[in-house]
Structure formats: structure tokens, C-alpha cells
Image (tube, rainbow over all chains, first blue to last red; front, side, top):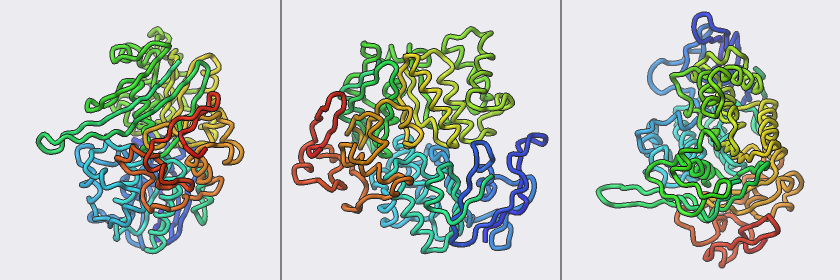
Length: 197
Length: 312
């Protein structure tokens, strides 16, 4: 169970609260949607769950224990802007295998072409980069996935295909997902319940 | 206003020593935007939509070669002319929020864009206030730095920098990603009002529900080429209103329609590199035959519309 208990965050000591007193749970294998207007704090909450931000208030627990500070984090984030989530000076083969070596079949199912791996990030489109970022996050030690606007940079066909692959992968392995999106039609397709911020 | 004819873009790279590899992500690309028109550019991820935007503005990386012709207001766009006009007569809403300066607050960045766009220095703060209000951003947001604003707010700031000036051509690369439905509609409605003043707008987007209602025409991209040009209305009804099989499959894949990822005929990517000989959709198309694999489909015109498919 991934749990946020009374989580809050603000920028600076006296800044306005971006996220305040949020309680949230995601069970293994469950797909939960997170919805809300732009600026409501969805991404900030995702970053807290993924360990990128230490919350000012409250805490995050995975299976009852606090988020580990070292080693592979069981909660993996797929960020909204893939071009900012990869090292611009690494070839993508290195970025892709940062945490594990994804099997060929998974790369094929995500529509990743072998030719991309020798390139650098600026030589791929946003949607192509995002598929590599998704593959990077699906390692065997991932228990929960935070997908922040995972497919907004993809065309409808690639989006449908990517969701099918990721959902199959997560269902097989009992990985829980938090899906952040503005697309109501998409949330109602993939999620079993939706939370509004 | 903007006419792109037979554009191709090549990336050249030296691998090891003097081994040179050439990628051609854009080829045989045609696009035409008249004054007062919004053209929505939609298509597969990696089909060269952002490259087209960057080619128009002249901000491709150094290892790129551009062939073909881009005309703006009737005259060819040379690198010198691009440099003189960009930020003034033609502007870009970039796709990546990484284009914001991380060390300046977002208000200062919009003020600078207003001055570049021709406003007097003392008018810039007022214009900036109005732009923030128009995009539903509180005045306090002006003092925030890019890392403090959300993805959707950063998107609206980028759109504000492009629309505070008096540019005649606005190229907006995914201006609605990260925005909620209401903010997306407001943003598109403002682009519509700019077009109604006689300016030209090119909108690159995957968000058909936000873009199609305000656009005049749609250009469908696939692996670096334009496979269909159609009135925006064709996307409202049934898939049969579209001519190219790819456009129809894309219509059916929308979460609001079928969420259908399409037949997995080749069990591979939509296209593969170096297949420029045949039709770019040959591996997934239900109507493909042997000739489709060998010959690049010619452009067939229907009035202002066109399609690159032998069967349409």
C-alpha cells in the first residue's frame, strides 16, 4: 500500500501552501486517477510521493514503512516533461539502462526503435523520449508508478498503445499506479477511481 | 502568409572518426497558412511537427540541413531574415518548458517579450499584467521563478510571451498540454481572436478536442511528411469524413471515441527509419498492397484539400 498521510508542501517558509493535508492511498495493482485544475498541486503531490520533494508536513509510507532514503525507490515517477528528466549529455542507451535493462519485447511494445538508443536527447522528439523514460521506470523493483501527464505529448494512436502496454505490465506485476491527468476521457478509461485536488 | 514547399530536414552526425550518418526526419512536407487562419498540425509522435516549427523560426541545431522552400509574406525565409523577424513578426510558443530562463522570474520574461515585440519600456508592465490576467494567472505569479510554477502555469507563461507582441505569425507547439479543459479553451479562444485580427496561427497539438473546434484547417503528419490536408470540420463527425487511413485510425484511437490502438499488423512501430521509398503507413494500413511498399504516394488534390494515399 502506498500512503500519503496529511501531506503538505509550500515553496519558502511563508509561501502559500501548494499542497495541504492530503491523504491518499494506492493499493498494489490499483489504478487511481488524480484530477484538478492547473496549479492545484497535482505534480507537487506526485513529486512528494516519488521522493523528489520532502514534504513540509506529513509523510509518505510504502507498505507501512517510510520512503527509503537510499537505493532503488519502489515508487517511480514518470515526469510531465521528458526532456527535463534525462541527462542531455548521455546517449539514450545509457539513460535507458540507468536502473535496469529492459527486455527487447518491452521496447518493441512501447514502440522504441533500436536506432534511437545511439542518439542524444535533442535528437529525439518529446514523445519518443517519453517512451524511453517509461521503459526506464518499469524495472522489477518498481512497486508503484506515478504517471504525471504521461501521454500528453503523444498522438492518440501511440497514446492508446502505450497505455495498453503499461497497464498490462503493471497488472501482471501487481504494480499500483497514480495517474495524473486533465483528460477526463482518459481517466475514465484507465482508472478504477479518481481523486480531485 | 506562410508557405512551406517540399521541405526536408536532415541531421548529420559523425559517429566514430569520419563515419557519417544521415537521418532524414522530415521530407516532402507541404503546408500553407493564409492570413486570419488557424492551421492545426497533428500527427504521430516523432513525425517532425516540432522540427517544422523550429525550421520556420530558424532555430534548428547546427548539425541540421534544411532543403526546400519556406516563404513568409511572399519572400523566402533566409537565415538572416529569420533572425531579424523572429520574436518580432513571427514568434514561437515552444513545446518544452525548458525554454524559460530558470534564473529570471516569469513576469520579467513576459515583460522582455513585450519590449522585443515592439512595446515601449514603460508600457511593458501594463501589457504583462493584462496578459497574466487573460491566462487566469494571479498577479503574484509574476514574481515566481520557473521551478515554482506548475506545468500548466509554465505553459501559459510561454504562450503569454508569444502573444504580447504584434507578431503576424504565431507558431504554438503544444500550447494546451498540462492545462485543464477550461484554461485550454481560453487559451485557444485567444489564439482565435488573434487570427480574427488577420494574423496566422500554426498550432501543433495532440489535444484534438481543444484544437479542432477553433482551427480552420488540419494538416496530418506522419513520419516527416504531410499525408492529409483537410478542413477542421472533418474531425467532428465520423472517421469517414477523413481521407487518409492513418487519419481515420487516429480518430478511432481517441479516448473519447474507441481508445483503439489499431491493428498490430507488423507488431512494430508505426514506421521504421529508412523506409522513405514506400508509403509511411504501409506497415499498419489495412488497405496496403505491394505497390504501397514500393512507391511514395503522390499528392492528390481535392480543391484546397489533399491526401497522400493511392487508395483514398
